[in-house]
Each structure stands twice: as structure tokens, then as C-alpha cells.
Amino acid sequence: MKRILQLFVAWRLLLFVPVFLATLFLPFRENSLYTTLWQYTGKYPIVEHELVYPWSNFDGVHYVAIASRWYVDEGRFLPFFPVLVGVVAAPLSLIWPIVPYGPGTFWAGILVSTLATMLALYFTAKLLHLDYKTKTVALSLFLLLASPVAFFLACIYSEGLFLLLSVLTLYCARKQRWFMASVLAMVLSVTRLSGILIILPLLWEYYELEIKPSKKLAWKNITKLAWFAIIPVLLLIYGWFNYVKWGDFLYFVNAHGLLGNSREVSGLVFPLVTIYRYLRIFTTVSVNQYEFWIALLEFGTLIYAVWSLFLAWKTKIRPSYMLFSVAMLALPLFSGTLSGLPRYILPIFPFFLAQALWFEKVRETWRGKKTAPGTTLLIFFVVVSILLQALLLALFARGYYIS
Image (cartoon, rainbow, N blue to C red; front, side, top):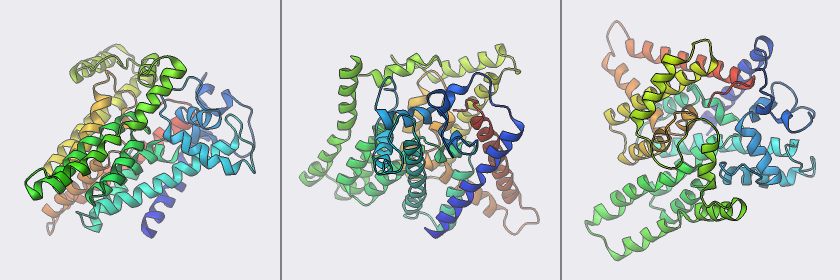
């Protein structure tokens, strides 16, 4: 835990560097005030500083709003993260009154994201240590924090919490604690919609650990499996809330179709159709438009995700982790757009495990030889990732959409 804490603190402090440089050299994007708290409330001390408020930009603004005044029209944001922020903000009301977009909720959001990410790193390490050596685990965590959009783990976003709940769910499954795994999966499903698909790797682990060893489906196995029935309960309750408030049980899904980003909510879109749409963007949108580069980032992320899946298969990671990766990637991939994909793949921890295993294999292959392309390749990959993260964070802090 000490090493993880040191890695986290160093990464978190270094994130302030691109934000600071952005304030010096990058003007805030014109007409993008809506991406900040200041579109909705007056500025207040400390948070108004340019090194502080950007951690709530874009979706963070909505999470702060929900946590402080509950839902108005933000149904597409699932409730567990803002509810947790609201719970943490309650005792802070002794210092700051709970008002919409206020400092109490802002700092509660920062606290929840920070603790969730720290714990996520710790439990990811515990989960991976069940199968891999410390060196591999350490490299996996390092690659995760070095990845181009890892800064979202430090923002008032649900990414850190989603990662934490995902690894905790799979860790409990590995330990055959099926009730606890089911409870965590239930909460995961109302953190992000793709969380409901955690049922797939859970079923695989259940088969591997409970049914396969006994070679039969005994009664005791069926009773343990019954716990999985609670997984969709909270999501169904949230659907009922949507029906009562907005007259649409699936409003939290359908609301995504109102964002104007070509996301399909009435059915699935074959990925080749989505790829064709992006090829059209590259041939019709000028490279002088910012949107061209965001489309390139999203398409590049798809290539990166496919490469990581290939590495996961090549390095023979645990099948349940492979299932988790495919499930978490599938939902955005079949939505008709790659918008948000860079952020959506951030909690797919097996990607970083597969990369670590592959880099280690390459380095091992060339061990003892005069040249060390494996080490050089790893350094190049990390440097490019860190530079991209710095650039994307700088843009994000100045009102430019990233993911």
C-alpha cells in the first residue's frame, strides 16, 4: 500500500503541471463556460482558482449538481457516484452549507474520487497478485496511471469508483464470496450502465470455481448462484424512479440520444457502420476543426482497445478478465459512436495487465543481447502516453471536450 500511495501522490501532483501551463499559454475555449461550475453559480474562494475548478469540468458539473440538489434533467448520469458524494458532503455542511454547485459538494466529489482511485489501485494490485508477480502488477498500475486519459480518475467523475467496484467484485468472486460479489455488482450497475455486464465474468468464475471442480450442478451450487438475482435490483429501482419523474422507465438510456453525438439508443449499431461514419468524418471535416482531432482520438482509442484485446488473448490472461474487457468495450462500441470511448475504456484494467505482460515478454526475449528494443519500446510507449495525457488534460482544463 505504501508503494501504491507513493505512486498515486506523485501522479496526482504532476497532474497540476499541465493545468498550470495551460493557464499560461492556452486561452479558455470561447463559449465554453457551460463546461464549468461558473455557468451555474457565482465564484467562491479556493475553488475559483484555475488549478482547482477544472477537476469538475464537463460531466463533473452535473455530478456536483445531482449530489447537491438531486435530479432535474440529468437522468443519464446513474446515481451511485453522486449519492456517495452527497453522503460525504453532509458532514461538510458544518463548514459549507449544502447549496447547488457549492464548495461542500465540490470537495466531497474530490474526496470520493481520490479515495476511490487510491483504493482501486490497491485492490487491483491484490486481485492481480493472485496470479502474477509483483513486478508485473507494478508495471500494470504504472501503465494505467500513465495512459492518456487517466486524469479522469482525479476528476469528479465516476471512473475511479467504477474501477474500484469492478476489481472488488472480481476479487470477491475469486475468493468465492458470491453474496458480496453480487452486492458489489448490483452497486456497479448503477455507477455506469455497462456495469450490469459484470454478470458475464461472474458467471464464468462461478463455473470455474464452483461447478467445474465438482463436475455437476449440485443443489448447494444452485443456492449460491441465486445471489446473482439481486444484481439488477438497483438498476430496476432507478428505472422506476425514471418512470415516476420523467414518464420513461428507460429515460437514463434514451437521454443519451438527446446529446447530438449520433449515439443510438433504440437499438444496436454494427461496429463497421460506426467505423464508416468515422472514415466519413476524416474525409469531410477539415483538419483545422477541433472536432476532427477529437474524432481521431476516438478512432485511435478503438485501435488501441483492439490492440489491447489482442495482447490479452496473446498473453493468455484469465478468461473472466477477457470477458470483462469485451463486455465493457461492447456497449459503447455498438452505440453508433465512439464518443466518450477514451474514458470508457479507462477502467478496463486487463488492458494494462496485458500490456505489462507483453512488454515483459519482449524484454525477456531480448535479454542478454547487445540491443534492448523491449526496454526502448516500453520507454517510448510510456513517454508518448504521458505527453498525450498532459496535452489532453491541458485542453480539458481550458474547456475543450476530450471524452
